[in-house]
Length: 154
Image: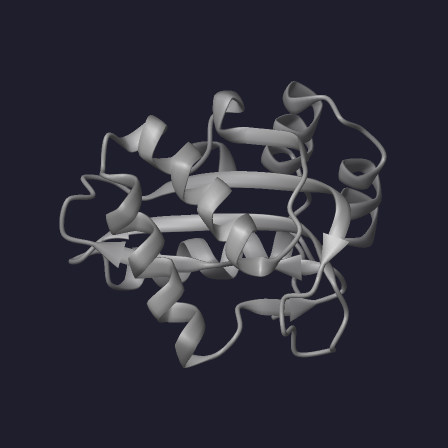
């Protein structure tokens, strides 16, 4: 699965300003609502409930909040590069500056897990992450996400 299947350039936010995890999730939900047509509140509530189960901050400044929505018709992503990192209760206790929101239909099952795995692999690649952190151009970030090498590390 290629990330270009999950995210389009308009879904890349290259210079997000957020003061907290909650504010960041609200910004992501607002963008996702504009892209999917699903109500912002429904998206926000879904990803907030998922965060209550455990942080989706995976370490190294990366978070992958995600959720399944009955109204979703396909797996969709929104990416944010923050101007300044925010505390995200990450596994490594480091603040987050790169966030990939993933939304999936309730019945997505294995495809949802495959998408999460692919996102994690791409955002674990040090070269890709350095390139993303080095630009505030949405098209460039989309290109880096889409063309990232597939790492064999699980």
